[in-house]
Amino acid sequence: MRPKVGLILGGGAARGYAHLGVLKKLEEKNIPIDFIIGTSIGALIGAIYASGNDLEKIIKDVRDINFLKLIKMLDLNIPQRGFIKGDKIEKFLSSYMKKDFDELKIPLYAIATDIKQGREIIFSKGSVIKAVRASISILVVFEPVEFQNTKLVDGSIINFDAIDLALKLGADIIIISDVSSNIDIRIFNRSFYNFVNNIKRILQSNNRTIYFERYFNSKKILPEIITITATTMKLLNDDLYGDNKEKNFEKKVYVIKPKVNDIRWYRFDHAEKCINLGLKAAEYVIQEVYEDLRKSEMFYREK
Image (tube, rainbow, N blue to C red; front, side, top):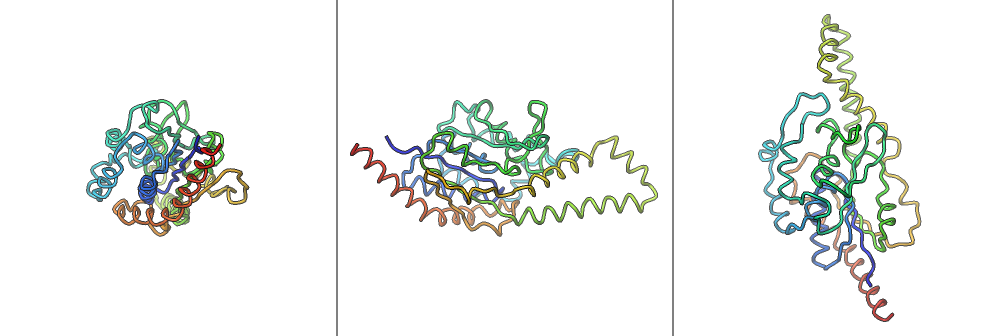
């Protein structure tokens, strides 16, 4: 009996392409994956991979994505809750994914954020694409996903302790692919405050203030975006990275941290760079995992 291996794929939008490099290195070393926990882009890539798609084909397809192809997948929306409705992307992604969690080749746990209650939602049953669609719903960019009388957005927002979930699922070895960066959060916070202040300034200085207020209230365009954004900022600032580094785990935890910190979240044209960075970051760590598994299997055989 070999150790149970859990793979955690974190959020980071375009930086998440680095997960593909990590997966490639895992395949090269024949490291088994017993389950995947995915957040945001990690849930998306995890779902595509767990559906049984050939990794080389996935890599080839993402390398072909450019801004023109990306724009064609965007259904722009009157910004009541998000600038992109998300139906086109959902349709595109569905061709790469199994319909139901029960059909996946590798068990998947997709994480989204309940923006109303500030808690994580873990999907492991039902529609795969709906779970992924919720997990990748980047604030303001995409409309939140309606689910059981609440609204779900990007799973990266809440400080979700995926390691605890992996331990509950019985992992003996946990591999984390971390593509997070605080660059977007700092810029987002600054931009949002500037946005709100500019709106206030326009309304205060314009003699048509009443018209603007009536229009926004009747169309419900800005208020919900501002409310959702403000709530998200609070969740982000409460505790962004958690306290995993201070915990002592009895199980083996391997962290792979590709150097993608300077890549902005929307640069989906940087697939090649991110994949290579993922490969490079994973090389030494995956070798350690391989040696650990090999020793463990020898131990079990001796037993």
